[in-house]
Image 1 (cartoon, rainbow, N blue to C red):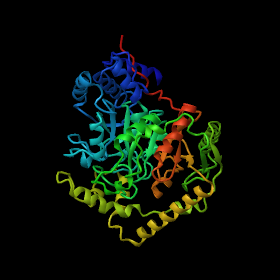
Image 2 (cartoon, helix red, strand yellow; image 1 turned 90 degrees about the vertical axis):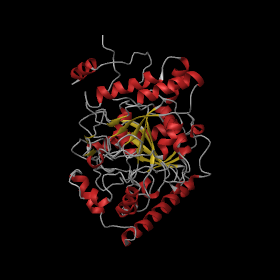
Image 3 (cartoon, helix red, strand yellow; image 1 turned 180 degrees about the vertical axis):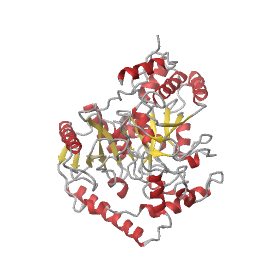
Length: 506
């Protein structure tokens, strides 16, 4: 396999000739290279395009990219000219961003992972896209996603693969962003998290993913799934890059009124919280109980993840944290079984489609009954038909979520906790044919609290495992502080061997 991969790499046309190495590079390193003259925006963009060409559809065929921006190089040239005349145009100057294909980018197809929307080109940018462009970013590509925001396969593209082992999947619907960021197809990415679809791909990709407080970041310009849980957020290789990206996209947007709750709750910069000593004195509680009924505590994979959690707890203690382990939360599994999310879907999607007269369908029902949708996803969409937010079961689910929210806050108060930590999954990444059991991602969406996934370690066979750090509403700054201290104190992130640095042909 490695010999074949090397041959493929050598045969790929190579145009990145500058000395700057884009593998694992960060926003700060890119901007420093622009300033020193070591790198141009055009060279940077071309370097990522070369990697996409080499590894996404060829080589290990990660299949993370849906659409490459055809104007990326011309936009890079404009930014090179702007830099020559006046320096950086903003905090994301020439930062190539990979955007989940659930998010609208004017002039580029937005498929939602479905062949139904393969020719749909929105006429507007999502709010976060507008903000990133104004900050100087280049939308390099739209990434593959689980069809209509579920799973890791879709009728528009097939199956996303994990760059650490292409026989395994990269987790749920933000699969393309997670795999592409892990494989260094762009500098940073945008993902979406309704039930864990930012944090799952981050965990399975050895990366950093933030599910923000539900009211922090605008969802305008994104097809909804469950509006009371839907969030957009950064998926990156470092905590600092996640903080920089959050600075740009967070804040009030009148097009998404719930973001009004964020006013007064956003710091001047999330990067101000980053401190290598940030875990000193922190009070951390550790949930050991699996939060999914399909976890298999007697399995080898479960034991591997628990050993990694043991190691992470000791690392946090060594970095100065006070740890409550295990943390007991009464009736946790029962409280997590809140349900009701599908009751929001039909109404929300119908309202969204009304704003897009050029969309190929006008109702959620047309989507749900379409033979184009992959069978597994069509079944779940059909189950959401004819449900509404007036259903008694939905109203009960809201009450259950409030009970869970109160219980978590009470436990945090009783133990004087700053944050709660748990493995993102109780098992390592599974094979393409199997979903990874033991997802612990539903707690944060159910109660609307922010959670940051950071790399913890790798299994013996080289599969990444992540941990979630969850805090109270609008505690993103604190989560970045803890995550940064853990990242800098452990350096668990490493790039996939299946997508190595490109080497110039002789």
